[in-house]
Image 1 (cartoon, rainbow, N blue to C red):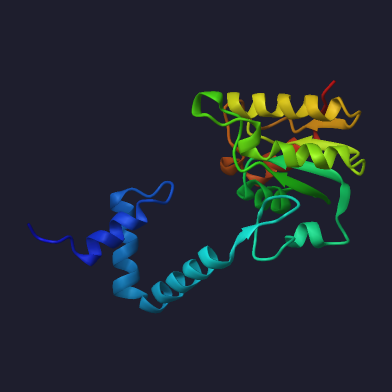
Image 2: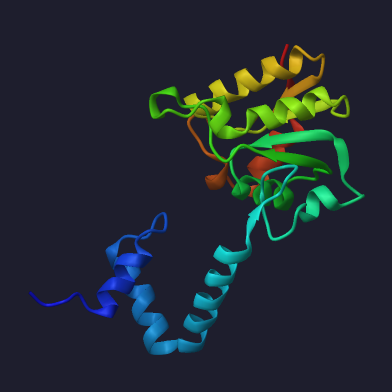
Length: 199
């Protein structure tokens, strides 16, 4: 039996990315090897560096190479307003699309009992400690409008309301069943400006 070649192994490795199937992976691999070997080397080096050096912010749980991410470390950010999102990608999207000056808390997932994902798996103990600290005045829930995202938002809202913290939820323009990653910046900005209080 012939051993699998390096090109096939590279194509298979590229298929691990979301939205990249075998044909797209093949096009990417061939492009990098035939037309942009310098870009391929740079990509490989940056990927290795990122895997080795990136971890999670101790405050908000987004990806960073420092103890605190640039958002949490910024004195210009309003530390009393916290936006809860499902992934670091959502942090990027909100920062680009909305005029938001608060900080974030990244769940790195959402509640999904059928998949064995409960409050501990998405860092809710850490969020509860922050809520109990007395510094948070508003919690903005920006989880996706999926069933799991809505259930997660409801659970977190109850945690905050028990501590008499104002809870708002992004609204208007985010379709039910949609995910923030696939929403255009105009729609996301409108949703942020139209957030509502949960009582």
